[in-house]
Image (tube, rainbow, N blue to C red; front, side, top):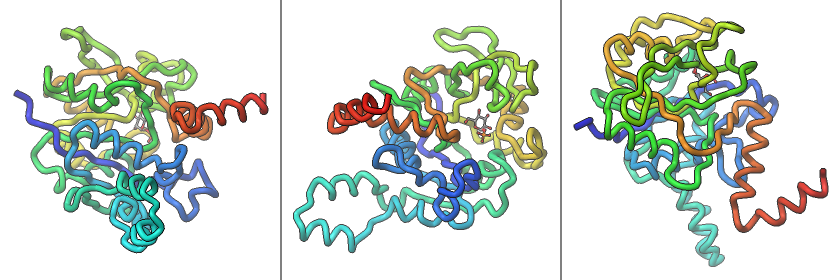
Length: 290
Ligand code: G1P
């Protein structure tokens, strides 16, 4: 039986240059989709999927992220004194159980692969989930990571979520080539990070949710740079692929690439429309604008 996935890594050290000036002093992971920061949406996904240990790879000026998941006694006291029980319950959603949040600093922005490598001691010798907070997957039933863990329970090994993107956007992503089917999933034959225009093997982009075996760290050790002069997790996965299977999963749900302004705005609308307390008002507002 495959070893249980208890830990998740959240790389949150990025500079967020695409959202300047909003991200001048505020981490991009704290940008809100409706009423909670991106990072909270992704942490909630991991918690609902059964993850117990949360590892944040942070950078300078990111202490607010860890604070967001910790208790805020003054605020709690004020809310309690005013009888604001609904707000207290909302606040409680942003708490992680004592001892379950960990952080490590990525001193230099050397790439996603380097960020993951920084978490190696906290992950140890066990499989782990990797969730990029730029990407939200809106699902009706099981969330994306939970769907991936179902596949992992059957197949073990390494699992990568993928989704189709328009051909003219593939060069912005990591892209997979699929091999043979193995029951209800496909083996991955090859991976390439940010393929040059016209060279992508498929339009199946790596979404930003991974379940990886700890041997991935062996291939991040050399700190070799790839696309964009950065240390890429995709290159390490390509190396590990020669030793272990990788499976591609297309999660059921709607994907929002919140690393782009359009994707981020679309996520705000879609998540608001999914909320019974907001749906009608937001629809009416949209109608006024169109
Ligand atoms: C990262 C990964 C890439 C993946 C993407 C998903 O790229 O390296 O493989 O497709 O996230 O958002 P980044 O967006 O950091 O350039």
